[in-house]
Image: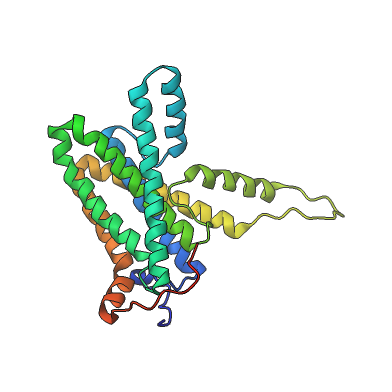
Length: 259
Protein backbone atom coordinates (compact mmCIF):
# COMPACT_ATOMS: atom_id res chain seq x y z
CA UNK A 1 0.00 0.00 0.00
CA UNK A 2 1.34 3.53 -0.79
CA UNK A 3 3.01 5.56 1.92
CA UNK A 4 1.03 7.96 4.12
CA UNK A 5 0.48 11.57 3.15
CA UNK A 6 1.39 14.51 5.42
CA UNK A 7 -1.10 15.22 8.20
CA UNK A 8 -1.40 18.86 7.14
CA UNK A 9 -3.16 17.93 3.86
CA UNK A 10 -6.91 18.02 4.71
CA UNK A 11 -7.84 15.85 1.72
CA UNK A 12 -5.76 13.02 3.22
CA UNK A 13 -7.11 13.16 6.78
CA UNK A 14 -9.33 10.14 6.05
CA UNK A 15 -6.50 7.98 4.70
CA UNK A 16 -6.04 4.53 6.22
CA UNK A 17 -2.56 5.60 7.32
CA UNK A 18 -3.32 7.24 10.66
CA UNK A 19 -1.44 9.50 13.05
CA UNK A 20 -2.53 11.17 16.31
CA UNK A 21 -2.39 14.58 14.62
CA UNK A 22 -4.52 13.45 11.68
CA UNK A 23 -7.01 11.86 14.09
CA UNK A 24 -7.32 15.08 16.06
CA UNK A 25 -7.74 17.28 13.00
CA UNK A 26 -10.32 14.95 11.51
CA UNK A 27 -12.11 14.77 14.86
CA UNK A 28 -12.28 18.57 15.14
CA UNK A 29 -13.72 18.87 11.63
CA UNK A 30 -16.30 16.16 12.25
CA UNK A 31 -17.25 17.67 15.62
CA UNK A 32 -17.85 20.99 13.88
CA UNK A 33 -20.02 19.32 11.24
CA UNK A 34 -21.93 17.36 13.90
CA UNK A 35 -22.61 20.52 15.90
CA UNK A 36 -23.81 22.40 12.82
CA UNK A 37 -26.01 19.51 11.66
CA UNK A 38 -27.47 19.02 15.14
CA UNK A 39 -28.33 22.71 15.48
CA UNK A 40 -29.71 22.87 11.97
CA UNK A 41 -31.84 19.82 12.61
CA UNK A 42 -33.30 21.44 15.71
CA UNK A 43 -34.27 24.57 13.77
CA UNK A 44 -35.74 22.40 11.01
CA UNK A 45 -37.73 19.86 13.03
CA UNK A 46 -37.47 21.01 16.66
CA UNK A 47 -35.43 18.03 17.82
CA UNK A 48 -31.77 17.31 18.53
CA UNK A 49 -30.59 14.11 16.88
CA UNK A 50 -27.16 13.41 18.41
CA UNK A 51 -28.51 12.96 21.95
CA UNK A 52 -29.18 9.23 22.18
CA UNK A 53 -29.34 9.44 25.99
CA UNK A 54 -32.27 11.83 25.66
CA UNK A 55 -33.96 9.59 23.11
CA UNK A 56 -33.73 6.58 25.41
CA UNK A 57 -35.05 8.62 28.33
CA UNK A 58 -37.97 9.77 26.19
CA UNK A 59 -38.82 6.13 25.46
CA UNK A 60 -39.20 5.49 29.19
CA UNK A 61 -41.21 8.69 29.75
CA UNK A 62 -43.60 8.11 26.86
CA UNK A 63 -44.00 4.45 27.82
CA UNK A 64 -45.13 5.38 31.33
CA UNK A 65 -47.47 8.06 29.95
CA UNK A 66 -48.98 5.60 27.50
CA UNK A 67 -47.87 7.59 24.45
CA UNK A 68 -46.97 4.57 22.38
CA UNK A 69 -46.68 6.42 19.08
CA UNK A 70 -43.94 8.58 20.57
CA UNK A 71 -42.29 5.49 22.03
CA UNK A 72 -42.14 3.98 18.55
CA UNK A 73 -40.76 7.23 17.10
CA UNK A 74 -37.95 7.40 19.68
CA UNK A 75 -37.09 3.73 19.20
CA UNK A 76 -36.95 4.28 15.44
CA UNK A 77 -34.56 7.21 15.94
CA UNK A 78 -32.29 5.09 18.15
CA UNK A 79 -32.42 2.28 15.58
CA UNK A 80 -31.41 4.77 12.87
CA UNK A 81 -28.39 5.86 14.93
CA UNK A 82 -27.39 2.22 15.47
CA UNK A 83 -27.93 1.55 11.78
CA UNK A 84 -25.56 4.36 10.86
CA UNK A 85 -22.85 2.92 13.11
CA UNK A 86 -23.44 -0.54 11.64
CA UNK A 87 -23.13 0.85 8.12
CA UNK A 88 -19.77 2.38 8.98
CA UNK A 89 -18.51 -0.91 10.43
CA UNK A 90 -19.60 -2.80 7.30
CA UNK A 91 -18.09 -0.28 4.88
CA UNK A 92 -14.83 0.15 6.79
CA UNK A 93 -14.23 -3.58 7.26
CA UNK A 94 -15.07 -4.24 3.62
CA UNK A 95 -12.55 -1.60 2.56
CA UNK A 96 -9.82 -2.75 4.95
CA UNK A 97 -10.12 -6.36 3.74
CA UNK A 98 -9.44 -5.08 0.22
CA UNK A 99 -6.63 -2.77 1.34
CA UNK A 100 -8.40 0.36 0.08
CA UNK A 101 -7.04 3.74 1.10
CA UNK A 102 -10.63 4.99 1.20
CA UNK A 103 -11.84 2.47 3.79
CA UNK A 104 -12.46 5.26 6.34
CA UNK A 105 -13.43 7.84 3.72
CA UNK A 106 -16.32 5.91 2.19
CA UNK A 107 -18.79 6.28 5.10
CA UNK A 108 -18.06 10.01 5.16
CA UNK A 109 -18.63 10.17 1.40
CA UNK A 110 -22.03 8.61 2.08
CA UNK A 111 -22.62 11.23 4.77
CA UNK A 112 -21.82 13.94 2.21
CA UNK A 113 -24.63 12.73 -0.01
CA UNK A 114 -27.04 12.35 2.91
CA UNK A 115 -26.39 15.91 4.07
CA UNK A 116 -27.42 17.11 0.63
CA UNK A 117 -30.53 14.93 0.87
CA UNK A 118 -31.28 16.62 4.20
CA UNK A 119 -31.01 19.95 2.41
CA UNK A 120 -33.46 18.75 -0.24
CA UNK A 121 -35.92 17.75 2.48
CA UNK A 122 -36.29 21.43 3.40
CA UNK A 123 -38.93 22.32 0.85
CA UNK A 124 -40.68 18.98 1.38
CA UNK A 125 -40.92 19.58 5.15
CA UNK A 126 -42.68 22.89 4.56
CA UNK A 127 -45.20 21.23 2.25
CA UNK A 128 -45.70 17.83 3.94
CA UNK A 129 -44.38 18.15 7.49
CA UNK A 130 -46.37 15.16 8.77
CA UNK A 131 -44.47 12.86 6.38
CA UNK A 132 -41.02 14.37 5.91
CA UNK A 133 -40.33 15.62 9.45
CA UNK A 134 -40.16 12.06 10.89
CA UNK A 135 -38.04 10.94 7.93
CA UNK A 136 -35.68 13.85 8.57
CA UNK A 137 -35.25 12.77 12.21
CA UNK A 138 -34.32 9.27 11.08
CA UNK A 139 -31.95 10.61 8.43
CA UNK A 140 -30.12 12.88 10.88
CA UNK A 141 -29.84 10.15 13.51
CA UNK A 142 -28.44 7.81 10.86
CA UNK A 143 -25.88 10.46 9.85
CA UNK A 144 -24.82 10.97 13.47
CA UNK A 145 -24.31 7.24 14.02
CA UNK A 146 -22.44 6.93 10.72
CA UNK A 147 -20.04 9.76 11.54
CA UNK A 148 -19.45 8.93 15.19
CA UNK A 149 -18.52 5.35 14.30
CA UNK A 150 -15.95 6.55 11.74
CA UNK A 151 -13.92 8.67 14.17
CA UNK A 152 -14.32 6.03 16.88
CA UNK A 153 -12.72 3.40 14.63
CA UNK A 154 -9.89 5.54 13.26
CA UNK A 155 -8.88 6.81 16.71
CA UNK A 156 -9.39 3.49 18.57
CA UNK A 157 -12.26 5.06 20.57
CA UNK A 158 -10.10 7.97 21.80
CA UNK A 159 -12.18 10.58 19.95
CA UNK A 160 -15.96 10.94 19.69
CA UNK A 161 -17.71 13.70 17.74
CA UNK A 162 -21.36 13.53 18.79
CA UNK A 163 -21.08 12.13 22.33
CA UNK A 164 -20.47 15.43 24.15
CA UNK A 165 -21.67 14.05 27.51
CA UNK A 166 -18.75 11.65 27.64
CA UNK A 167 -16.31 14.38 26.62
CA UNK A 168 -17.50 16.70 29.37
CA UNK A 169 -17.30 13.86 31.90
CA UNK A 170 -13.69 13.14 30.92
CA UNK A 171 -12.84 16.83 31.14
CA UNK A 172 -14.24 16.93 34.67
CA UNK A 173 -12.17 13.90 35.63
CA UNK A 174 -8.95 15.37 34.25
CA UNK A 175 -9.62 18.77 35.85
CA UNK A 176 -10.13 16.99 39.17
CA UNK A 177 -6.76 15.31 38.74
CA UNK A 178 -5.19 18.62 37.73
CA UNK A 179 -6.41 20.34 40.89
CA UNK A 180 -5.58 17.42 43.19
CA UNK A 181 -3.01 18.27 45.84
CA UNK A 182 -0.45 15.48 46.13
CA UNK A 183 0.90 15.26 49.65
CA UNK A 184 4.56 14.34 49.92
CA UNK A 185 5.61 11.60 50.14
CA UNK A 186 2.92 9.63 48.31
CA UNK A 187 3.11 6.10 46.87
CA UNK A 188 1.17 7.02 43.71
CA UNK A 189 1.02 10.58 42.41
CA UNK A 190 -2.23 11.78 40.85
CA UNK A 191 -1.39 13.37 37.48
CA UNK A 192 -3.80 14.78 34.93
CA UNK A 193 -3.61 13.64 31.32
CA UNK A 194 -3.09 17.09 29.82
CA UNK A 195 -3.06 15.78 26.25
CA UNK A 196 -6.45 14.14 26.72
CA UNK A 197 -7.77 17.33 28.33
CA UNK A 198 -6.63 19.46 25.39
CA UNK A 199 -8.15 17.05 22.86
CA UNK A 200 -11.54 16.98 24.54
CA UNK A 201 -11.62 20.75 25.01
CA UNK A 202 -10.84 21.18 21.32
CA UNK A 203 -13.62 18.75 20.31
CA UNK A 204 -16.19 20.48 22.50
CA UNK A 205 -15.14 23.90 21.22
CA UNK A 206 -15.52 22.66 17.63
CA UNK A 207 -18.95 21.18 18.36
CA UNK A 208 -20.08 24.44 19.97
CA UNK A 209 -18.69 26.57 17.13
CA UNK A 210 -20.42 24.33 14.61
CA UNK A 211 -23.68 24.64 16.53
CA UNK A 212 -23.51 28.43 16.59
CA UNK A 213 -22.58 28.78 12.93
CA UNK A 214 -25.02 26.06 11.90
CA UNK A 215 -27.91 27.69 13.72
CA UNK A 216 -26.96 31.08 12.29
CA UNK A 217 -26.68 29.61 8.81
CA UNK A 218 -30.07 27.90 8.98
CA UNK A 219 -31.62 31.08 10.34
CA UNK A 220 -30.23 33.22 7.49
CA UNK A 221 -30.02 30.84 4.51
CA UNK A 222 -32.09 27.83 5.49
CA UNK A 223 -31.20 24.45 4.05
CA UNK A 224 -28.54 25.89 1.77
CA UNK A 225 -26.32 25.71 4.86
CA UNK A 226 -25.92 21.97 4.23
CA UNK A 227 -23.96 22.71 1.03
CA UNK A 228 -20.75 24.07 2.66
CA UNK A 229 -20.92 21.27 5.25
CA UNK A 230 -21.10 18.70 2.46
CA UNK A 231 -18.26 20.48 0.65
CA UNK A 232 -16.07 20.26 3.77
CA UNK A 233 -16.76 16.53 4.02
CA UNK A 234 -16.05 16.16 0.32
CA UNK A 235 -12.65 17.79 0.83
CA UNK A 236 -11.81 15.43 3.70
CA UNK A 237 -12.49 12.29 1.65
CA UNK A 238 -11.16 13.46 -1.72
CA UNK A 239 -7.59 12.14 -1.48
CA UNK A 240 -8.11 8.45 -0.62
CA UNK A 241 -11.15 8.03 -2.87
CA UNK A 242 -9.42 9.65 -5.85
CA UNK A 243 -6.35 7.50 -5.27
CA UNK A 244 -8.40 4.29 -5.21
CA UNK A 245 -10.26 5.31 -8.36
CA UNK A 246 -6.99 6.18 -10.11
CA UNK A 247 -5.21 2.94 -9.22
CA UNK A 248 -8.19 0.58 -9.26
CA UNK A 249 -6.86 -0.96 -6.07
CA UNK A 250 -8.84 -4.08 -5.11
CA UNK A 251 -6.37 -6.44 -3.45
CA UNK A 252 -7.41 -9.95 -2.36
CA UNK A 253 -9.08 -10.04 1.04
CA UNK A 254 -6.91 -11.20 3.95
CA UNK A 255 -7.82 -14.40 5.73
CA UNK A 256 -8.57 -12.66 9.06
CA UNK A 257 -11.28 -9.96 8.96
CA UNK A 258 -10.96 -6.67 10.84
CA UNK A 259 -13.15 -6.18 13.90
